[in-house]
Image (cartoon, rainbow, N blue to C red; front, side, top):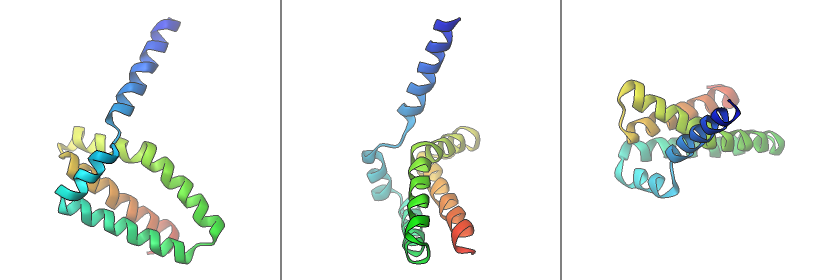
Length: 111
């Protein structure tokens, strides 16, 4: 049983990390999808606003949260959209990026 659980965990880790968006794929999405590029620019704009509005301590916490989102949440959301909604990779990552920008605005910027 212990070997089975270990094997199952290893498969889950490999499947998750194999799906993660690489820097090369990210760059390709930026170049090849106008919608993803615009969503990325929107998220960057939110980051600029957060930098201006939050204290250094608050901003550091949000940055840490963003790193976790990039490592875990973004890819999970995109994978779910591709599987359940039939989105392309570009559509899924565009949606994930827009959802994240909206979340940050609503939580930290009150709009």
